Length: 308
Image 1 (spheres, rainbow, N blue to C red):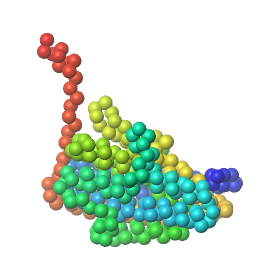
Image 2: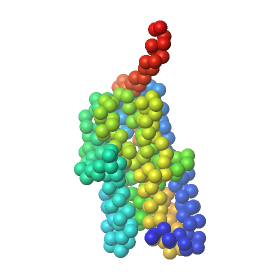
Image 3: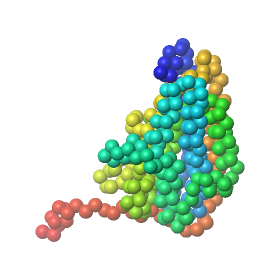
Image 4: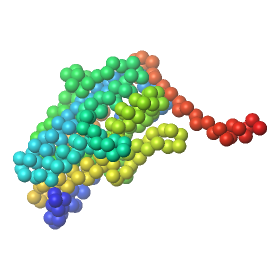
């Protein structure tokens, strides 16, 4: 198993230093998502704001499974069959294969399809036409989108196992204070969950997020993010951490990889910085759409008592 590489003296400690870089970097807990969630809850977002956000996220998400495929290709060429298995498993899980109801396995979805469905379902309440990742890639709004795509592609070609760990770890959280990108992203969808038709939220949006993180329904009928160590995205990060060790022969090599780690994180953070900047500028373009309030759950027993 690749995780046995940590038996080499000093390797676990060296990787802990890389973990610290990822944990403390803004790319792992960017204020973009908090700003949007709080803005949605307080005043609502404008159609232009969500349009910018969707474009930025589509360019960030578009190459996810492409990059995982690069990891699989590298692993098969090098004979690391356990890592190749990890790559296939990740793509399968992120396409919803292991989270459907009644233990039903569904091979009719892809990661891109589920992502587009979720964002376009929310986009409908802003009267936005559906879009695709391919369309947004052809019409990127700002240079940070190009830079993020190019840097991620380069890093996956240069060191696919390490790049995979960085991306999965930043998306899946650290199991403590950080939700990760996917947990933070759900906050925006959660704010508008009562504005979206129930069947669309349950059949399109929830499956996308449940293929990454744990979502639980509370007593008031609200869906909320919950951190669980068995969540798909967190487990991907844990597995990828072990896989990443195979490219290193010494703790010194791991420490030298800090520049590589920061390059990917800086590219993602710069993208989110620019998205937030452009979204803030668009706050007065069009009328904000406020989320609908949840329908109150009526306690019939209490009502009967009042009428007697």
